[in-house]
Every structure is written in C-alpha cells, then in structure tokens.
Length: 403
Image 1 (cartoon, rainbow, N blue to C red):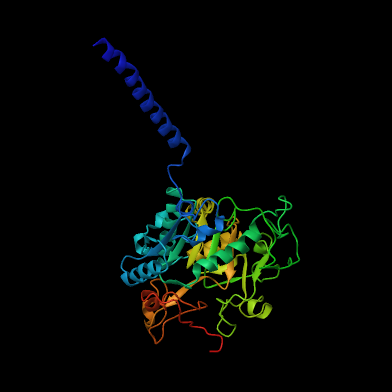
Image 2 (cartoon, rainbow, N blue to C red):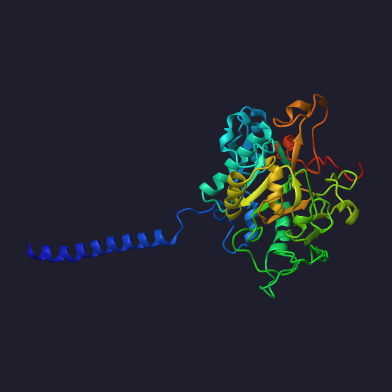
C-alpha cells in the first residue's frame, strides 16, 4: 500500500506541472498574437511575399469593401453581389439614406446656407455612415463603392500597378529616407515648376510601406470618379489648392487596359492627358478637383479626419464636392492626402433600359438606353458576366482600338 502511494505522488506532480506549463504557454500566446487580424494581412499568400500580394485578396488589399446601396434598389444590390462574387471580391452593404430621413439639426454648418438638396443630403449621410464604420470598427482601411460601379476583369493586376505608382509618390527614397522622389511632396513649398514625370519601368527605389500595399500616409485613394484634374499652378479657381497639392506624376505607358484616345473620356481641363501622353497611358497623381465618389478608399487616419471634417465641421455642397475640397485643402477645408489616377479604375455602369432609373439623386431624363456601357473600362466585369459565369477566359472588349 505504501509503495502504491509513493509511486502515485511523483506521477500526479508531473501531471499538475504539465497542465500548469500549458496554461502559461496559452496565456503567453494570447498576449503576443493580435486578437483581431486585419483581413488584408490574414489573406497574405505567405510571410515571405511582399505587401503588394495583399491586393490579390478578396478585399483588394484593404481590410473591407463597403457598398452604399438604397435598400429599395434591389437591382443594384443583385448586380453588385453577382459581379463581386465573379471577381472574387467580398463586399458588405451600407444602407443608403433618403434625404427626408435626415434631420436638419444634425447637418454640419453650411449645409442649410448652401441649400444642399435632399438627395445630396441622403448621399452625404450614407457615405458618412460608411466612413464612421471604418472608425468604429477600427479598420486599417476600407474601399467604399457606390452600388452602380463597374470595373475591369483585370482589376487586381490594375490596382497592383496603381500601388507601384502610389508608392513612388508617397514613400521616402531608399537611398535617402529623408527625401522623396517628388520634390513637391509632402508640400509644394512654393515650388512653381512641374517636377519631371516618373515612368513605370524606371520608378525610383523607395522604402517599403509598412501599413498598406498602396503606401503609407495617405488619407484617400480616389480611384473611381467621373473626372479629375492634374495638380498644377495655373488652373483657374484652384490657386489655393495649387499651393498644397503635390504635383508629381507616375506615368504608365502602354497600359493595354486603357482605351485608345477616341474612346477615352476625360473631364474638361487645360492639361488634357490625351494631349500630353501617348495612347494607352495611365497616370497616377495627387487629386485636384475630382468629381463623383464612385469608388474611394480611406485609411483609418483619413476616416477619422473626414468624420470630423465632413461629418461635424463643415458641409458646403454635395458630398463629392466637399470631399474634393478636402483633398485640395480649399474653401475652408483642411488638406487631406489624396491620390488618384487618370483614367479611373472604377466608373458608373449604364445598363440598357430607361435612363430615369440610373440615379436616385439627379435626373438623367426619360430616354431609352439601347446598349449598356461603362466609360473607360475595356473588359467590363458587368458586360462580361455571362462569360465569367461560363468560366471563360476571353472577354469582350467594349473599346477595341480599331472600332
């Protein structure tokens, strides 16, 4: 009997010690491993892959993708669900808001004085709800779409190219981390001359980003718009902005996803990219005067600043105009670090049918649209839905060079 007791005591001691050690290890691992892993990091192909690989995940290198959608527009929702699924993208919907649902007393200063209409008030509140969600959920970044947006089937490789250009404009030089390839960044500092263009294939070597594949320090990536201008010093009505917006450009020649000039539609401007660069050229640059918030990304820092700037401080026009002024630091708005591209990567899709069904904010007449289209998007995902459903790998080009 005594022998049995002397044998069991060491055994029990070993068991207790082992359980205690395992508990300590679990507590240690819990403390060193983040409890919330951003999707952009979680989906990285491997720890050895560069940050650029995150762009090929289901949220395009952002932590989430939000889509602003009026619940009544089930047609827009269904189209977005299908097109995103066929593009291997994960989206979440933010309910749209009707203007008459927004109390006047919640509007920021300036909205009533500038007679912002009901449709624009509703759009402002819906976009602010999306931006507020980025802050509330602690997201590192989010891409925000309107629900009628379209993109090229090659969108992930396109955005990887965009990231190469944005990094060249945002990141410190590898050889001298105290300076940038764009001498007008982060502020022009009164430099009047347009800096030399930077060309893909010879982009400067820069420090690798640590927070986003698109670079560090940005507030907004305005990559879906109706039109935008190049920053320069002599645009009428933009003199205030020209003192704040950096002027560097990253130029991608021979981008086969860019339509030829006779198909390429741009916002009217003195610096028309079709007159400056060869056909099939895309240019990445800081944003001046962009219109339409079809697709834009915000960082956590940018979302916090915009929640203050446009949600609380001042609203003197439709949301896209106010956001544009924030990117310029004009008309009483603080400057925000915004990048864009010409042509854009996301644009309105115009389905065949009645034109009055296009928008719930502005009128587009009562004509009949005979043929669906999306401006500046060659291999439109929406126009290639049937091919994508069939698993095909060749796609219809709505803007062939010889057409």
